[in-house]
Image 1 (cartoon, rainbow, N blue to C red):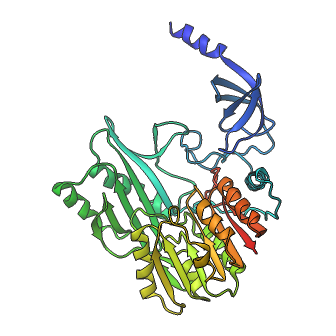
Image 2: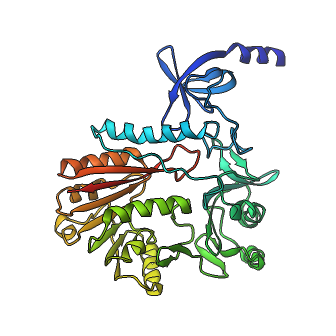
Image 3: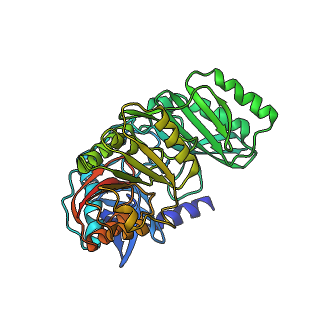
Length: 419
């Protein structure tokens, strides 16, 4: 019976030529008029695959692309975080830039797209792990590609050493609070002065668990540990330097994933905004761009999350050598700044989530703001918002793509507009 099954599986294998890489980083083969997505393949490669609908599993590479290289991480192929470790860096960076060009072209936009800013290995300072307790113990890692399975991680080529070196400790913290077969989200930020660990979804910690977790405070590498929004201990406030100020991350909240990428994004924003005064920073987060801008101009930072607004206000109280920073809470998706409000500013910066800023872009398109810098982690929504601004009379002068998420299909970019 086992032999029959094996033969049946082999009979389903077929050869295919990879035509291109899709938006998600998988190779795409055109077979019998249908697209089949095959992970870990490259354009022009002849491969043997097993097909299940539009998904293909790579069996072997028959003819390899000259751009194929050995992946730097032992998790590649099982862990779903990285999609393109097998691609030579020049081809990889070219492909990423082309995704931005293609997204703009789909909206009928032609604009100068600069070369992709590369980011090195061991650069990602923020990770969102999944953890689950099963019959064998606690698994901490990332989901396999297109799967609910969590791949246990003992090392990682893209995370900073400060996180990789403490994976065992992070797993231990998760194990203390995890109920059987419950899945937790473990967000870890390597701040400038220690790890900020936030665990959610695994269940509330009882008194005994809190006592065990508190013992981890003796580890000098941990600045703060939070479980279900409750601080278990706080050895020191996690901090991230941002130009003339120090940012104060919110436990489990958003920060730019790579320090080098953040610096490149900020440099592009500052260069475009120039000496404009005053400035509005929309979807401001914890003030990543706010305080760098405030070194030159008074800044109004607008954010919808109360905790993030409080973090900006706290950082402003501590900052020295900056102009006035005013933080306002406002849901810019439901209640974007209107043209009359926007016209008070000589420059506007906006950095929305992946969904983009359609409503706010529509208001900006009707405004008289001279300069706009749009930061985005999604080329498709960036192109949509850019089309709105262009149709409203703005000119897209350039786009700088940044490889914030190394080896993934995700792309960060700064688009510069002038009226």
